[in-house]
Structures are given as C-alpha cells and as structure tokens.
Length: 392
Picture (cartoon, rainbow, N blue to C red):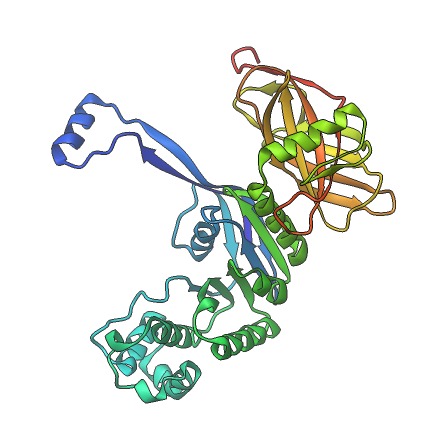
C-alpha cells in the first residue's frame, strides 16, 4: 500500500550563476543569496491499494518522474508524508549499474546483486532472465556491443526478478518490440493478481487506459484529476487540444454569446445561453473565501446548467477585467448529472492585478481535432473585487 499526503517538492534556483570559488566566497561575505523557488510538485495526495495499478500522466515537466522518485525514497519531499507498506522496487533508470566492458552474464550477476539478490538466487534465475530478454545467443557478448533495445531488455529482465510489494515504473515498458512488451504486460498482470501495488508513469495513453485501474493527471506540478483512467485521459487530451487552439478563436466564440445570438464561423459555433447557477472561491487550503488578494492562487467552483449535454466536454473559464480578457484556463470536472444536464467544475485562478473581475464559463464539445466544434457560454453574473495583499 502507498499513501501520500500533501506531498510537495520545491527547488531553489539561484538568480546568479557562480562558477568559481572566488565568486562563491564573495557572495558568502556579502551575505547576498537570492534564490527563486520552483515548485516541482504542490499538495499531491494519492493512495494505491494492494492489487491496484495507478497511472500517472501529464505533459513534460509536470512532475511525474519527481513524484515517482519521492515514492521510491530517492528524492526527499519538501513537505508532506509518504507511507508505504512492503518492499519498494523502483524501475526508474535501468541503465544504472551496468558496465559496458562486462558481458551480459557478468552484468546480470552485478546488477542482480545491486538489486539485493544473492549469487545463489541469481544463479537459480539466470536461465529465466536470459530467456525473458531473448538474448540466449549473446550471453558472452560485451554490453558495449549491445543495441539500446537489447540493453534495456536485459536490464528489465534482471530487475523484474527482484521480489517486492510495490513496483514503481517510469516508461520502462517503452523498451523492446511488441513481443517483449507483451511479456512485460504478462508479468505485471501477474503481479496485480498477486496483490502487488503498481504505479506507472507513461506518455502512452493507450497503455494507461488498458492497464491502469485509475490515473492521476498532473499539470504544472499540480493535481488536476485522479479517477477512472478514461476520464483522466480525456481531460489530458482535452487540455493538449486547447493548447493548440488559437486563443483568439476561443475568445471570439465565448464573447459572441454576450450578444445572445447563435453565431457560426469556420472554427466554432456558439449555442444558446447556459445558466451558471453557483460560483464560489476556495483558497489553497480548500476553505471557502470571499477575500481575494493579488498573487494568491484560488480555485473557483461553478455549477453550470446546459441546454444539451455534449458526449465529450472540456470546460474553460475566462477572467475578464473591464473589457480586457485576462486569462483562459481549463477546469477539471467534479461531477456530471446527465439527466439534469448539469456539471460542477473547478478552475485554478491567479489574479495578477487589483480591480473588478467577471467570468465567462465555456464548454467545448470536442472530437479531439484542432478545431473548436462547439462552445456554449454565458458571462457569470457574479463579479469579484481583487485587492492587494497590503489592503487585505
């Protein structure tokens, strides 16, 4: 079992690069150390039960590998707690521990010992390792003469012999051909049936959809969604599509609803008015608040009534200050009531200046193309006043 509570990881990035000992001493004497805080992960909560596989998805730089390294105990979290029950087996960088000048046979004994196997245990499993890797003809070949695929297959085949209760996998199923990947699937299916915990990081969304019971979607080091794999993948794919749509198209489509008419153009059509029933703001602690300050991050919750329920939806929110569109952000769906044609969604908001703000709530009926198929929107009646931190 794995349980992580309020997990965060922050790094300090120096503003000035110091390359010599003299520069470091000079800065030490001056006492001037300026750093920028980079939050690689912020307030992540997850739990994986025995016999369950959790997929972790998200764009590059979203903190997937950092999270896996913290679960493995390689990276220490800045904040939060990690609780594990059982032995952890990380499948992260499988190339570590191999020596190019040694043969495949010698590397199996070396790598196996680094993984905690005794020489007797390695000897007993040696034939299975070679058979699984499909390298029977290359047992006495030096590793430096292996292709990258052969190297990865040997590493994976040796590592999988390690006994444990929690398996942390970072893109290792991308190695080898289709036949080898089928073998890998068979091994992990067996581990699931034996009640092992599996956490899989992958950019292969079909792999996550087929193999994982649930998926955690990370975006910019923040929690976006954790639930059924199909829903997580839909949100992730939707976000990637929104990033590829010209913001002016979205703004034009969402802004057209203010006229109360249906409009159509090459990339979008605006449907009739939707009804935004409830809007509230929560601070980073999850508490409802009416006091909004510049520079703080909030989550806006909205309940929206639609005229029709699209088969696949992406929810958007645009903050408007005066006549200026400030930012368009994608939300995460909290619940959907198809009978009532309602949904509840949460949107991250970061206000960079003081003043009065209004909001437009948008819904995209997307077919996973790069064009906007449909938008339904109504400007929210609720408006807020953002104050500076000093006035708060």
